[in-house]
Structures are given as structure tokens and as C-alpha cells.
Image 1 (tube, rainbow, N blue to C red):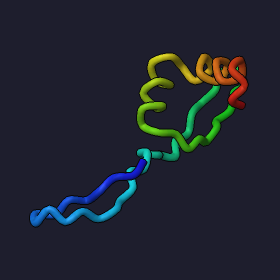
Image 2 (cartoon, rainbow, N blue to C red):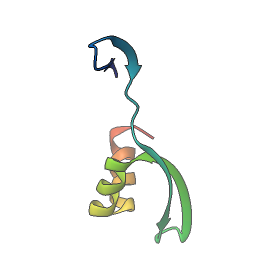
Image 3 (cartoon, one colour):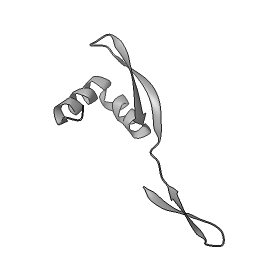
Length: 65
């Protein structure tokens, strides 16, 4: 996403907004292994809420992975 930095004198310079990505390890009990994913913080909250297995199955069903 693009935008502007706006100084006190109202001079606008271009800037970019990046997603808040984190490298996180998740344990999959069905496969008895750990996986490392680079996910956004909102995705970490979703995985914690629904569970890693449910999220992976949802992505497989939608064709994302």
C-alpha cells in the first residue's frame, strides 16, 4: 500500500505501508512435526483461534496451497 509521510510544514513524501510479517513455528499434532511459516500478525491470531490444522485444511480446500 502506498501513501505519504506528511511533515510539520505539510510537505508530502512518498512512503510504503508493509504488512507486519513474523517468522513463526507451529506444531502440527496430526503429523507430529513443526513447520515454520512467515505470517502476518493477524494470521497468527486466526491460527491461535481456529487451530493450525483447520487453517491448513481451509487453505487446501480453497486452493491457496
